[in-house]
Image (cartoon, helix red, strand yellow):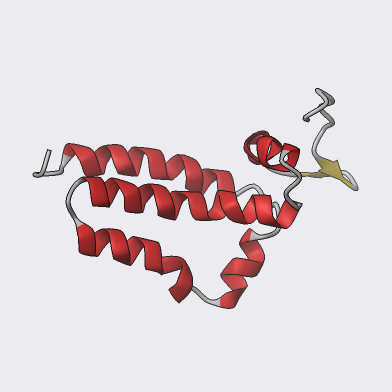
Amino acid sequence: MMHLRFHEPRWYGQDYNTLLESLLAAPLVALELPYAVASSVLCLAPFVLLSACALRAGWVVSAFAVLATPLLLPIRYGMLTSIPRGFVTGMVFAAIPACLMLFRLSPAR
């Protein structure tokens, strides 16, 4: 994708998810990060984004709880999210409206 070659995401005839994860990971791979690290960065992005939104809203305890959540998840979660799957981008894009709702409902604005 960094070289503008877009191949169809298929493996032995199976349909997979959209190309959104690879589009988001392409800049990280261009920085020569391993694929597992790029996928893990994308997986941790929603937690960091939600934590930053909560901290900006003045909810310090909530920001800490959201940021500590990946540490409390089982090891299998880390293994699943370090493999490029397709559901990681859903979490990234779901965090954006969650942050918008958090700012909307924030009394500290």
